[in-house]
Image (cartoon, rainbow, N blue to C red):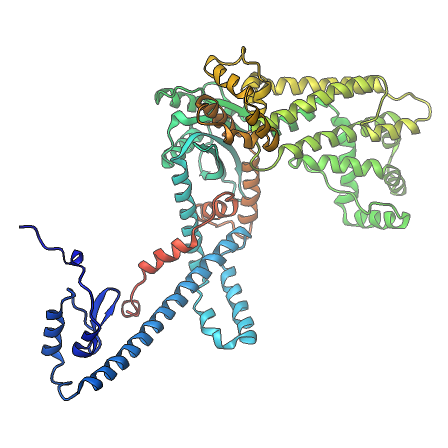
Length: 606
């Protein structure tokens, strides 16, 4: 015989039981108003038996009206106790939520965990002045060092869980990997992921920061990257691209990271081919060295260092510029690591060239080189060409950059170089304002336009050489960049029919014109599955390791000489929170979990 299920019998609580048996209904269960006990099964017999067994003697002399009054009083008392409990619970949850919110802000602003105590002291002082009656509520917010550290870890775990969940929907993904050293001389491997789901939505997020305490060979790097991919439960066959900083340990043909990952993909029987790129921004910065104008830069660096290195010289130079009422009041430093600083130093030195010579003369320094007309022409050219290189560098930076757009930017710059070379040979200096200034001021010698045009030609040749791997992928990138201009006959056979359908669809052509290449991919209909897969793979590719470089800047902000003992786990958690872009921690969910694991007051006091 089947067991009876009481829940399915639709037994209802009757109002008369409140006065007859002193029971009320709380959260679907009958609860005694006199002793607070609940009865498992909502059945009149059970309520009557409980009342007659435990409370009949106490209330036998009361008539029905008195019983009704007493029942109402007891119900009001119960409701007030429930309201008090709910208020205490909501206040407790609010305090926990506040600690999570502040922990997230502390992590994002690169503040030490001990800042929580300082913030709490400030909150209490403000509260004492503004709303002293709510002082206890602020005191309930725990912001101790250990609490903040724990909250930061919980927020990081929540973000990772969200990323793992998103990763299950990726139909293609790529990785960006770079390595740097922190303040404690520990090598840190930064890994970012860019994944695309079936809706062609892109997720670009921090995957891991792995400390490398020993060697940093290609095998060591592969072990860490492989561990991250497996932890994320990502299938190797969906890995499309790998972008690195171009170091030998990354790109070595036999034992580099790229070679090791290709071997792993073959072991996993992955059908797709891994596309490996050297970061576009690194390549562009390296191209600048093809000009071979270090002799100009060394003289400028030596001059700037003489002025800036000694406090007295620096103060006197600034006073000298103030006295001359120049537009600029100082010279910036140049550092090799910060590529953009070279352009700023060159520009300022060129604009202040006469004032610098006057100041050096007053200090008894030889200024023959700085006054030489050929040197000044080369300096003007380097100033202009570096300005152009800096402009493209800034265009290539940023998050959520589509590789086809970055490739188009590089192609455009290569075309500009061809134009500039031709114009320079004809002494047309329209795009070189500093050179134009120098040409007008030359006294005897002619402007060295042929020599400088050769420099532009060398730069263009280096761009072609370094970006040859992108040129090899040109047809693939153009499929995403402008599918309506692609030659169908030269396209892969599996895409030809869909390309014809696409190029003949006026509605899709109008949509492409309205939203652009990056967004258009999401509007490709389901009847074009091969084009959608191709678009997903291209969208997933990183064009640069910009995000890794940005993360290292965040790492250096957090792990300073004052926080050099910050653990790898805590550093990892901080960076996951501060670098999150499309993901946000689900604080309400974390607070709910905390509520379920709260210990009772009696246990916590032991």
